[in-house]
Length: 327
Image (cartoon, rainbow, N blue to C red; front, side):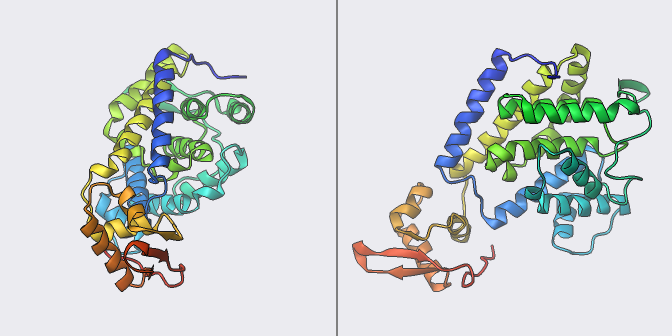
């Protein structure tokens, strides 16, 4: 059974805008960020998604845990971060259309945090705002059927992926299949659904925008509940995705050091290139700055210089010879 929602003019406009921006991201070679930027984005994603659920650790503390450093904090908060790191490190191993994979992800994400992690709930649950109940989830005996039906929708219905990911996120939140971890699973699984068609979303921490608009996030969920359709939530989430892409596309307006430029450019895995290729990525720098960057890369054994003057080309050294830039 197809979940209830309408395709509004707002949704169509946002889908069109997001699609254009994804094309622009790919055209500007920024869909594959550098290892350093990927690490930063993973930290932002984990910190924001857990903060929405009440985790008290700071970005600096999450960074320290990612780097295997000792952190002082609530044991539960630290364990939530450690579990999330494991899940996001192997995010590509999960199949977004597999219910079995979905349960496996929850088992890892909630390991030692809840009883029977990776299992659907067997008790009634409700969502409260202060003492007011804002959502009473379906009874536990319906959960298995509702979730199986939701995964059938993912596999069977020929719907735009951007919309389908939002629908799944909302419907999963509505069903509330677990005793705990529903919010972080909804955001994780939307990322996976999007990644299957648009790889850029693996490295796009849109959870940071959800975190900064929590009131609107929960209001969109509540309004959709009241309407009996996910339309309002779809519009909210598509707005979040659009703004995340806009921030990513602001790449060329940021100021980078020479090491940061090199780290990013080398991550594009160009086997052979010229100074002109380098300047096509960093349009704001002068030819002398580009030459200086490339000379430093040659000195650091990151690239090999071939030819002289107008015939100069550069070749990326094999991964075994490449050192990590520290900046």
